[in-house]
Image (cartoon, rainbow, N blue to C red; front, side):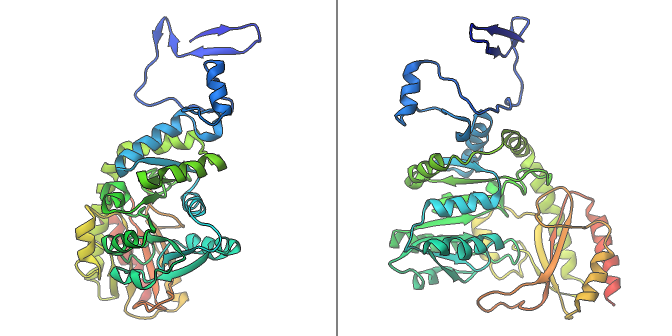
Length: 388
């Protein structure tokens, strides 16, 4: 490593050793606050707000930019921004495009914190939230008013797995001159490309499959050309950067995403089809199954499925009985989130604002990890014995 000292005492490190440039397969982790300008003219451009590069660390350094460019390419978007968590990507995107007096239409099956943010925070700024059916399609036109600013979808929902007709929603949104945002974390950019279907912004909880090891909190939002400048202005104003080490880990996760997701998909499909054959099980809720109410939409818009799905029991077991089943499991850990190598489980009754066929039933959600599929099935089988 060579270095040069100047009269004021700082050291400029260059990436060389023994007179040769040091090159690695992966990018450097670049962190810092101060960004040095090459000349006075560039500094003046920054002061005027016209500098084309990065002028301070809070605007995201090279590791973050490299990750954003990779995601943007996968999403077929115009620009991508990384955020410190998935919910942070959602809340900042909503803040960027709403103002007092607006109304937002939000699918009833969205991630819980998304709904809470709308009702607890956006409401404080006089932004109205109206919930729409989780399987909404052309009926979206019935909800759009003169104050509607945007439609927020989550397809499929990460707890109850309804799918919206994105093409019909987008068609109605464009006719009304409003934007469509979709949380498409379940499928990742590999299996669903919302911007290709006409959506304006696609949001990913990078925490899930992209990172894949349950060790990073991160999110991102990818925008099309139409709304890119508006989101850029917001992002540059709030200076919401992401930890460079996390960006590096997320970029590394992208390298293996295809291989891991194929394994999650294969194992989850096997387990879902096994569950369908169990007498104790009432309904398996997985979009790739022919029994799923929106299976046709899944086949049309998605190129694959992930490892997250749910099921219900025929009998309405007490919470104590459900606890016996869950606590007996050895392969499934209990914890929130999903998309990692470790299989996880959650269980609780879900309610919807509108009618829902599984209202009041315990919904057991499985995040199928990378363990041996037969071992996971064996574990569920022995767990079921505690419900007899």
